[in-house]
Length: 344
Ligand code: CP3
Image (tube, helix red, strand yellow):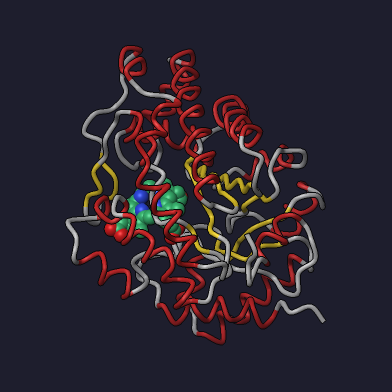
């Protein structure tokens, strides 16, 4: 595939770039009135995800409106539990809810593994359509949740501040936990392979709840499965974003991925020192900084760019955009990265 703008792919591979590429987690979503207009006509979030023409439309919106250097396919990490046999609901202003959760060995036996990927044709169709409509303007990013974050939702049944049910399961039922993680891993490998086949030019693994685990458990129950996925799907650049997992940054030095996501709690210079020069780092402005004035946003953006000091970098926030962020402020951040990172 020939791209008009392939900055993000070059940055991911550590090749020369004229300026730092930029995209935002949750760039397709409620910050855009254009997204809300599409969403209002439907019964809900899940209908949007499962209707490829509409999913493609909202996938491309941020490229047109914000000028980001990549699209990310509009979907959710929770389509994997759904395809494995645990359907979810997306409750307005509350978030995801699973009517059934995993409580026993028999529950795990009933879940699909590799075959779950057969049930996600709507995602592959949305990717194909998005790539066709993008027509080479920018690359499309595929994604999946990390097995531990998916397990957390399958056990907990909804979001949680502590994920204490999921963590309790790791302590009290480690054998079952590994069986469940193994199944999620197999499903995710096949799912990402098919995303790449459909046209995803790179992918990101979101470990949103990494930060709730102690380091030894993080290595045992999360990192080894992410590694298994990255090793099984090496065809395109891979990004791992372990939110809150500052305590395992040294493990990424030799990890089978090109890019490591930083959240806004992680010091940039320290992260570079710990991870070393061999990885692209992605991030990491605090999404809350986008409530500042445009002048102040430019100052904060400059500080972030300076801290990366011209090393391998993909600009982003340290986590997803907050839904009440003003779209002009988001555009201000994107424009500031583009202007202030130009190589002399
Ligand atoms: O623009 C993009 O980033 C692409 C689309 C995308 C969504 N979810 C759409 C979405 C992506 C990459 C995700 C990933 C995702 N989903 C994660 C990992 C990233 C992260 O934020 O840590 C997680 C943990 C989920 C699970 C999830 N989905 C939650 C907890 C919620 C509710 C919170 C909220 O913001 O409402 C969702 C819903 C969701 N996923 C929305 C969107 C646009 C909002 C629902 C809506 O618009 O109706």
